[in-house]
Length: 256
Image (cartoon, rainbow, N blue to C red; front, side, top):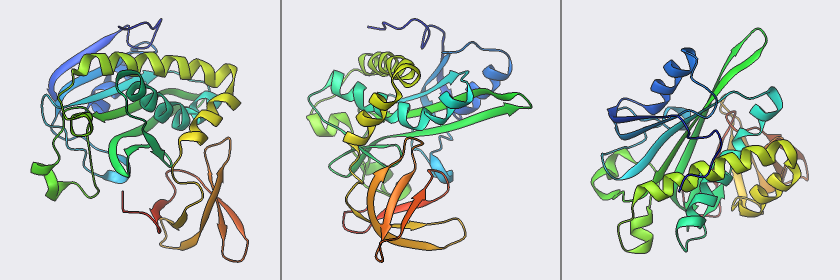
């Protein structure tokens, strides 16, 4: 049951759309209030981070974009708020205990259960809105889409052995997002620790590849309050990497 005050109180539902992110951007430009959510049964051109395709067949998953109107500090925390809320929703509606692969993939046993795409719009005075696209695989079967998916994927149906209703999962997601959004403003340290405790990237050997092609090898040791990943190189050098500026490969774990 939806228990929010603002998040999800205005919903725009699409049977089919290119991308809920595109719809949400137009609505935000037209003045849609904070908390407006666009939900689609099917996306024909869904996308993830770094231009990856997000496969979105009808009737199988949650495809939603939340419009928020944050201050700058709150905008910086969205990459932490969003994956924690998605993991909360899975925990609230199933016996599963998802993990987060830095920065914001939701995983079960190194298989991708969900992902998040965050985009912001700015004017001369600061951010005008942020769009948080969240995809969660509920009844998704990745097998027919194997040639379009570049990493192991799973769904609640696969993990639990039965189909699940999507509506309770969506309600749990919106409830959790509002709670974590408020927590980010009132208790950012507690939010950070919830995120950190669920990260499966820490204490792993990683290779960071920058947009220019430079690689940095080391061990992921920590995450900063900003969300940056701290990596210790072989010589003890510590470097911080910000989500969106690098790609991550876990050198000692299955590709995910």
